[in-house]
Length: 83
Image (cartoon, rainbow, N blue to C red; front, top):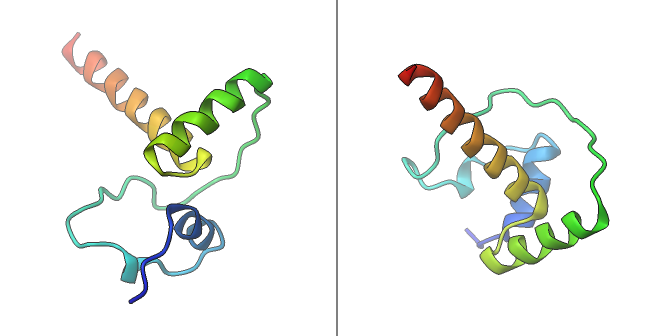
């Protein structure tokens, strides 16, 4: 199968297409079963910083935001469980 970019995979996922053939078994945690679209207004400087970081690590802005939110929420869950 021809490799695809992270942006292409995000688009396929967001469009509801099956991306299972692109995933290496055991390499991804299944975090979200259903999705819900949300809108957020951010300062231009924040969007520019997100674009720089997402380009640096080779993923889309949307994927970076999803990852960072998930990472932060998992950290919060860990702290809550410890108290």
